[in-house]
Length: 90
Image (cartoon, rainbow, N blue to C red; front, side, top):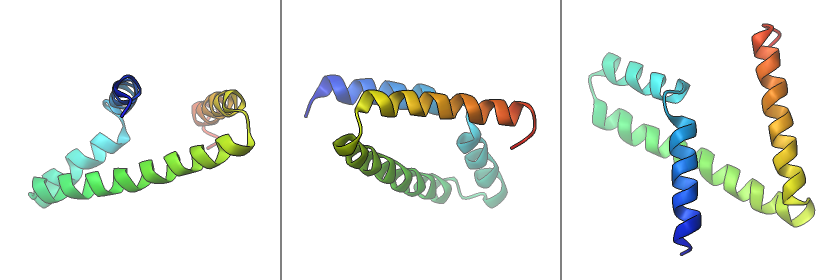
């Protein structure tokens, strides 16, 4: 295992996910259900599935599209979606 890539990914995902909607959902679900362990396990399972799909999609796209182009396309989509949300279009 490449520990440099592992820790870079861990850091990036941790910082990107810090205080986002997913955490607010987890807080709400744990408070409402009173079952934090079940909410924790459900959260892990849901995030694992989403991550699995994104990693496989990235690996497949990298075979056909330059990874740099994927990076720029992701950045543009992020900005466009942010602008649409800002102007309440989305």
